[in-house]
Image (cartoon, rainbow, N blue to C red):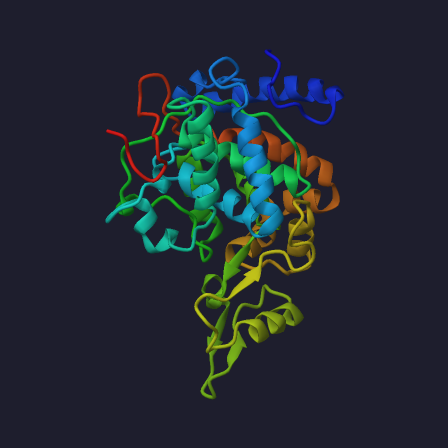
Length: 336
């Protein structure tokens, strides 16, 4: 394996990277046949500083806005689950994925655009927006305390972006466990991947509307709890922060304990019945996923190891490589 142009903090982690490389080879065979054309250090010769430029952009943006890591991590999910990891979610215009109501609360676009502008200065027409999205999400996890990992690159940017493709392919916070399994299975992801990747909710925030289904308004205009799977004290906190007349722009952190740290607190919260979304709580309630939730709650290192494998699979879904797609000059507009 070639030396990565972006030095990681510890050379002893090389063995871990080699193991991840082997795991990636297995993972991509399941996730997408085309993803076998991705390579580690893909830009080693054509743009040696590509990953460093993305990393520095993410770090700079996050230092001034601590909500950026959560936004970038959410962005890669919404990109990869619709049309594959091809930056189709970045395209602007009527009827694009970005215009769909399910994507209107997405953020982090300015970070991707900033990194892409810098890349176009140093390596014009070389680095895809799809790779920037994947790398930015990878770096968002690392700078908030999560595992540092290498991911292969070489994705190409898609030309198709349709709002109609969004809702059938993304997870809604009201979904049952079976509804989530169906979508993950369609993407080549396993039940374990579902539990692992749900751990992304350890950072980030959500609008009140994302969990309003757990409450109902009474005759006096006050919210009352109707979802008995959630801790009552936590529910009371949520109702105080998100009253009936709350602004549509009001947000609540996903993790009430360590909202700015990528750790295993998400799973600890689930065990304590403090999952923010219904789609979180069902992971503890269902016997097929409960044990893994409890394992991750008790063992952060196990979660980190599993995250590294599942994230590789996530960022390999439906990738376009070789002559497929294009390399956009601007991430919000198709070049052709």
